[in-house]
Length: 415
Image 1 (tube, rainbow, N blue to C red):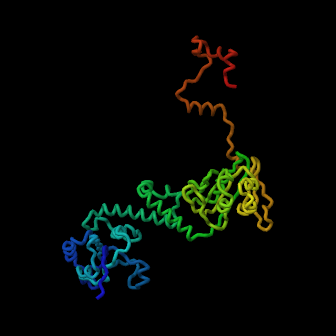
Image 2: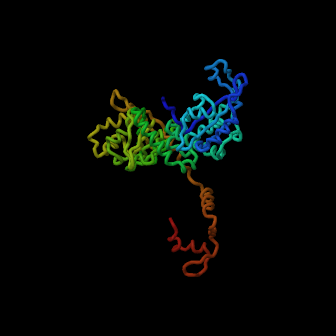
Image 3: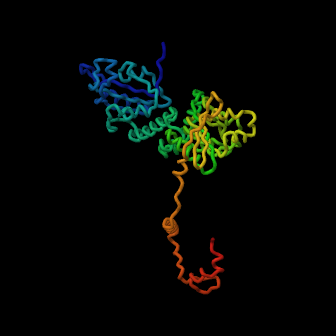
């Protein structure tokens, strides 16, 4: 004879009466079973659902279940057995005088099953009060833990689904959760990265190369380009580890790029417009599949390529064809060219005024502004008056204006 499966957790759902009003569930019998089986039932909780209504989906399956109509009152009973006392389905069914199809194994989390007793995790359904739940444990404390656990589960799932990324985790996740569950959260980001590397081999990345002298607005323009596309950006210094601190932002700005940050082949791999890849980083390689990469440099693109130690291994065309938009800036103009694959060169640039630098250029400070800012910064100092008497190194008291007139004193004043 085939042995029935054993359970560690289960849910029993049964109508209280049939359509004719005949009782189907005996509350006194249930309470007697819960008392008699206390040696193996570690936790139990139940509630009567008498305000549930049929949904449109349920009506589609059974036309007699009209959407909006009240369902027959029914009980939800949860049982969790002691770890060394798993029970057979047939045995549990026998306790309550039910057929085995009324017994359902809880395959998910116990916490989710608890929350469903009040429909806490089903907001589209009638919300029952926690006081309506009967249990042999502190149900309020369990619900609080279940709420927290459900929140953590939701956060982890959103990370795995790509809804939360490393760069915006502090705005999407409560800070205390980040502290208390750092290991799980970091592991979720790691799994997400591994999943992307295994499934997303292609990418569609646009690369801009911006060059110009210091102070012409290259970085400001790069940030403006990301902002116009609605992309969060990461500004990487041109250090030996370009990806240090990168958290999967959709825009990577390599600011003040230097040819000694990595080898030319690795740099070209990073800029590949079509193939996703991992990029070398100090502690571990990082997966890069962003929408936009912007390089800023004081060197023209040909000069930048020539500064790589192994520049002769890859022609400059390989760099240019990846940097499809080439921007050359001065304090007066911005020249924008696009790569033409047919001619293997950049097309004739369109020229714009450099409004970027002018919009951020500061106006000269007025005497009034200087006086106010200094006074605000040093409120504890007493202003110096020309006609007041001061103590000089010769320990004689003289008027300040007389000292100022003295040529030897004037020589000590800043030019």
